[in-house]
Length: 413
Image (cartoon, rainbow, N blue to C red):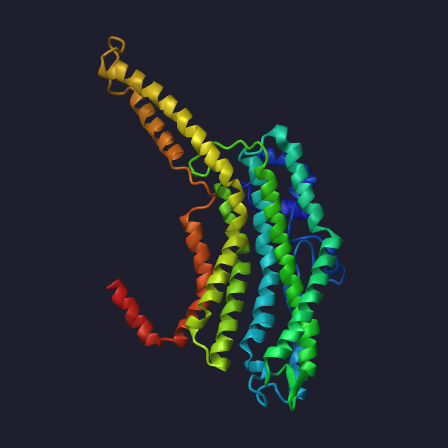
């Protein structure tokens, strides 16, 4: 990868990297899950990517011209752009959001994901969770992830899966929906319209491939964390983050935030389509919304649970060790200051023993309250807000703005 990328990352966050970072190999320093792979290199050759992830607007425009613009033309020629069928093209919220919001967000999300991954991976070294003796094993894990990310066979498999899903999707569109811009009805028979063929065999496969490619990258991230969790990690029970030093991993939510929002917006559009065109009510989609929320939670934070067994083990061991240390110290403190065994002339006021006792109490409290997952309530609430925000406008299908405001005021006051 371009050496300027590495300089940019190091230069943009001197607080994130220190002297230990310099001990890593160049391949580990340059590790990225968003850059690389056959599609990445193809887009680079076509001038749609400037290393590392430049020309984002250009990619969005070209993909929109391929996935959306032809549908406008074909739907207009078929007379179903804004009327003529039960669900005209421009009134199909699910399709418009999928192609004009969801897909661009997946593309733009790569930059945020790339930034966080390039900071988080070296933190295992910077925070001494990985010691110098473990560098070779750690770098083997990182290189394994890089090889999988760059695998042509893997992306070919994703493409094959898209073809299979596309076939199922085609049959599903014909078997369930009639009177839409992508179906042509003739008596009792119905088939795909010209716009429908482009949608099923061009637009949707592109969306599905990019989406599956995202899932695959998140799988690689989870696999990398699992491999790291199997190492002999230097986890410190008294670390003030209460996660034995692994608290930095919760910042991955910033990297996947656009990805999470994109999925929530897509589900919101799907629900809105059903409400507007099929007469459905919001509560009818409760199960789908709940399933989506759980799915996104697992994508964002699920990989972090691989460290839970280690955190539980460290917390259990430390509680005994620190308990023994605390018992020894307080006994000596009592003997010295309560039972009067302190040296003659030594005064209680000004003695460092009091501060040491307080410091020990603080450390013991941290050990006793280790959180066995490397993220806190703030991160969980942040993730919930990302999922909920795109869904909130759907409440207007059940209540007016006035009713919502009055209900909120009653709750607050």
